[in-house]
Image 1 (cartoon, helix red, strand yellow):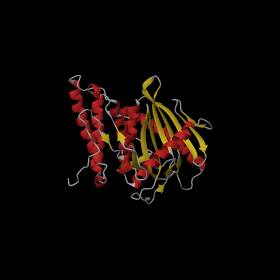
Image 2 (cartoon, helix red, strand yellow):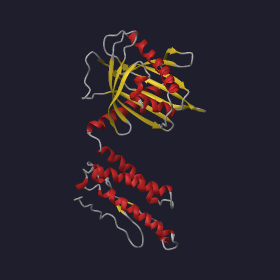
Image 3 (cartoon, one colour):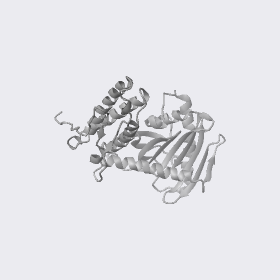
Amino acid sequence: MKHSLQLGAFKTQNTGLQPQLQDPEADLGGSGRTEGATFENRGNSSSSSSSNSTATSHQEAMLQATFKMCAGSSYRHVRNMKGLRHQAVLAIGQELNRRALGGPTPSAWINQVRRRSSLLGSRLEDTLYSDQELAYIHQGEEAMQKALGILSSQEGWKKENQQANGDKVLSKVVPDVGKVFRLEVVVDQPMERLYEELVERMEAMGEWNPNVKGIKVLQKIGKDTVITHELAAESGGNLVGPRDFVSVRCAKRRGSTCVLAGMATQFGEMPEQKGVIRAEHGPTCMVLHPVAGSPSKTKLTWLLSIDLKGWLPKTIINQVLSQTQVDFANHLRKRLESSPAPEARC
């Protein structure tokens, strides 16, 4: 490698370890300047009192080398070396985790570095995406916030459908969104199992849900965001012809709750198809969380906001959408009962 990493920001004194780390955010931020971060090991006064200090110094020297790798990757002549930057962040995170899991208790400056490295990793993560990819990520997060905002409001919901097993569909009209539908069901399966089927095995949905002909992931962005193309089957006794959807979807976990959200988006490589009407999802989401007192059961709430396009009476649209949600719950249960449960994680 022709570039030399200038690491003069690190200085180690014989009387104590005081590595000084120039904050890489100063180079990555662009518009602003962040003050350099200095981390001090304040336990040096007893370094000669026991043999443990020798091992500790050796470990901290190894960590210092990791810092150098990370700091060096922030210099301008290696700014475009994305692989090196990414590896540097991973390396420092792994070393800090190793220190936390074994050996002496991390000193205060170790904890400071851990927080700094988390922030640095987030900033570097943004640099790994194009402007368009970042736009998709933000659109998915926006869909999630809007959908959760609609669900959080308990006023104005009217019952559309009630099943003997307790499944129910509610609806309400939301300003600037239109009529939305809310499915509430309890499934006798752990949350991780539903997450596996609805997210990790999303493209297999056409195998068990007759209302879906197929779903294809067009692009995966990071670990949370995907662009999908969904082809829906005819419904309502063929009164509603075939529709397709291009959507951005994101999946996140908040404590013991999983949220799967999405909305319509534009994707140049998937133009409208001949003979198929391009419909649009509004802000929509599924919320999964264990039933209180019964962790083997999952409460599923599905907010559906959709514009089917075309010339369709509202009465038909309302009937089709509410029935689609009821059917989905029934097909999902059958799928979960008939297929093996792989190792899943939410």
